Length: 68
Figure (cartoon, rainbow, N blue to C red):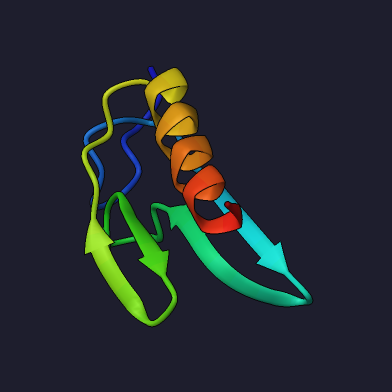
């Protein structure tokens, strides 16, 4: 049986990043012990993980807002 990622309520380990001109402007990840969260510039805030699809959709929506 898969084990949970420390700090998260699921067993998925992920990192999604938006890099613009060599700089990470947004990142979604679940760093060990911190749980699910996103980085928007210098701000780090928790996010709710429900499914991989919902995670990707939220990341894509934030990406589109940033790049608009």
